[in-house]
Image (tube, rainbow, N blue to C red):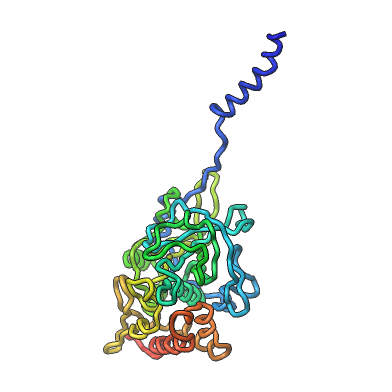
Length: 380
């Protein structure tokens, strides 16, 4: 009788032991780009693509197609609704020096069922107006205007955000202030696309000048490279370290050998961190200040030859074709401003007027810089 009892429980015990020690659960292997794919991207990536004529920089999307999945809800004026989220730590947050935290909205998932994780830039030196982090506003403005002109950028919003447990997902400690679960006018970001790294090593960046030169040597249209350089000067892109410039793939496919291939024409090179813009400063609270941006002209013309004031781009000479490409896009924005105050409404949606000058004053300076490029002529 005792022997029969042992026969009953022994198989169950062996099954349990196998489950715990012998049989490991299957782990889905992530499909990664190869070194060859990365090398191909470094030769063929685009910095410009003709923009969607119906893209609305105030809303951050084409109204006919709607916002991207996971985008915060915005009203008709482009102002994002408040967000409540919970901490979701990124184990590979990048090398940025500004504190950020990561969070998700419960139930908000991507097409694969994975949580959509926001990268949030808070006001880490304090929430008073004089201490607010200017990177939040610069990133929003640069993202919206870049997309309207045909340059690539991560999606960005400014929103009041509440995250009670997000101190545990901070990338680094605050400076001179304690963490607060409520962050007014925080910067919310979703990445443009999948970064092109090698074997998922999270190293998808490339040095700015060297990358642009390599693309040019491998057949990239000079007009597009020059327009991109001139645009970086227009927005006063100041933090030009390698980590801030990314190779990404807008559309890729997974192969049978569990590698990933970027589809032809879908590799792009862009500024992956546009916070230090619209008035660069080494101090976060002094970034995106109109007084700083006013004194920085994007183009210089001498003897008919044009050059850009962009930082760290290598060759600063600008061709007439490159000037004209950016000028045409800027003219479209000026026309939109006349029709429905598009430029002014983007500045209003950024909420920068809460800690700096009114949107109309920013628009006047935007128009002045645009006119410099539109009216110039280059013999380069």
